[in-house]
Image (tube, rainbow, N blue to C red; front, side):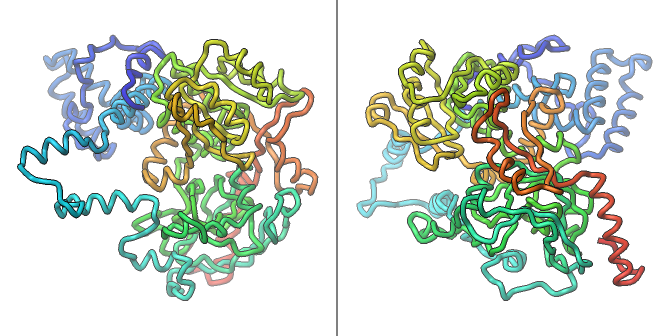
Length: 581
């Protein structure tokens, strides 16, 4: 967040347990106090603390203030959770998840303020100082400048550099290139309960529950077998069922890049987002340099913009390890993990757009769905007012009550009555609009924004882009943006995504991020129950707000049971000496 003093406000979100330091004084470096490296093991930290105790303990004539600082350093670095918080925020874990979140939010904002683009004035001054002239042909750059420009312009264009053997083995472009059987892990005959489709079309019409979906007879190079726990029904899931996005590959600008959508071989299992537990791996997966995984690791499906869906709406799924993100076991409740992309999307929308400061106002539609619920609660923590638009249906009052409990500042009916909408806003002019619907719903929000405001689309449930009046674009400087979590992960990397998940996990565990969703067990699911799960987010009923459905696919206990059964089957097939997966 550019140029905003969130640090001072974040320090007031929760009472500090220690006196506040003046801003000119940097907090102590706990690693330097103990004399250990940032990569030090727990044993090294413990040994360093003992050495310091021999020298600085007050009973041995040490300074009590120094000893107190050493104790705080050891208490923080010897606890994995407190150490993780400290590594991100430079604050010891005692400050609480909510304050740590505010602190990290502020630090990222200060860092963003330091970034700048091309300064024409500065470049011209430099050129004059060197006595150089502008080249008549256009460009006159050094080799380093040219390479930097080339690298910068490859973002979003797909893979342009060299291909490794691992790339070729994993790429579906080269179907005739396979690893030797030495890395494969044979499997006994396995079947799963899965939600599948034989042709693209309306999800309620083409999706069905297959109670005996056969799985491959082996795990090929880089693949793992995942016992799925849960998966959220999202707009992207439904879009990938309804439409083969490969049709876009033939049209500009997509036909001008290497970043193509992969075809989905039919019949296929639905599902792009979910959480599960690894129960078997190909023999090379635990030793991979990138994306290594082991049995009993908890994993999320990595947000992918172009690759074909992993097919996680199944009790078990064979997935390439490069499509998975390892997370700490029980980082947060399973339903939160199943909706983790929604939580991360809410985090990024507030972090990256609107240049928000405490006391500002945002407006969002579809505020009753997971992204909206998370935005409300994050805004409450950051002292940002939220105007929340929800469907004008029979469940409006119940929906309003739920969102107010979460921390919503205002909850309004989202309908075509623009006059009533503007009157309800009064003098409030939001700096940021978060659009989940598109079309006329997004257009209404653009009218509400203050001069220079930003309207960000993160989903298009109507399938239409908001049509913004030219007068708003030119005279109010309203800008329209699109956000996609998969694209963000591609640009910022998996480690940044995992850091964000850990931060959100701390907020969830501290009770600062709740989710209202509907559970839908897949085992024994009838066609009518499947249709209800696919449409539960569209409209509320009398006395019951609408909710996103979370498909319940398994449990950790069931995953352990399947793992032991699988190992027994492999031993019986290939002999007791066969190494375990």
